[in-house]
Length: 390
Image (cartoon, rainbow, N blue to C red):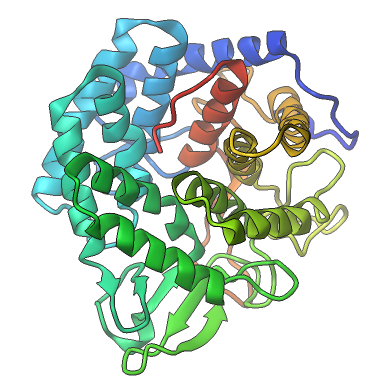
């Protein structure tokens, strides 16, 4: 397994970006027999992903990798495998298979919107619009948010989570495709509620926020996957950074940009030397806690998204940060030997149990499917002008 560095990384070069993408595409090619007609598990087990049915919230990231591999290589085998996945995703949404939650954007943007944008796949477009329809069914007018999961309207489940910012681009896309403003309006409302409640005064974020189902008033922030309610779960902070950038692309609301910079400053101030965070930002070197490499890739994509939208000076600063982050990931976290793992990036954490959270605990110090996807997306964004799936 690669040794994690304690040295601050230099920016990755264009040649190193290409080499890292080539290496990732080679690994994806080796995975085609296992995952053309199946989904990847959310996280690896002993650094190897098992094949599973298409019923997890994370299933969209593997076909997203296929589309990125197709874009980088031009090889039809990746396009064909991705379109096999599109049929599985259409079947899933038509039959409402494990879709009673908010993660429709994670599922349908990198799989089906990508298929529509890249090759004009009509089934991809249809599936993604159906997914947007499902997502807005979870909108709660009382409280003004998209309920994350669980029985709708029940007090103990009347909450949203920071991750949902990454599901909102599906709604903006659906309004543009259909001409119906209802999707965009719900996206704007949910983003406004998130800004009002989920960002703390110190610019960290709550993972989960509960609302009152009778009055709609904010109740309390909490965590499910962070270390404790008042700590800063690294991936939640990364989702917030990337989510603010995507929201700013669709709606140039100055508060989005200002919040992005505040969230980013909190995150950067709590990174170890190699710029890859521990699974909660409360931890630092010497605490004996695992990293979450996926948070670094998510943040890198958010930085590159915002860099395309702002003035040259901050844009250059964001891109330099990304090149340093990606140098660290490519050198010390990326899988170099297929005998070690069938994933792309080691040392991620899906869900670590603590004395203060409510998660089951799984995928600790493993590869995770979104970590692999966002690693490839960040490299792709560095390699050329890229048309986003989001």
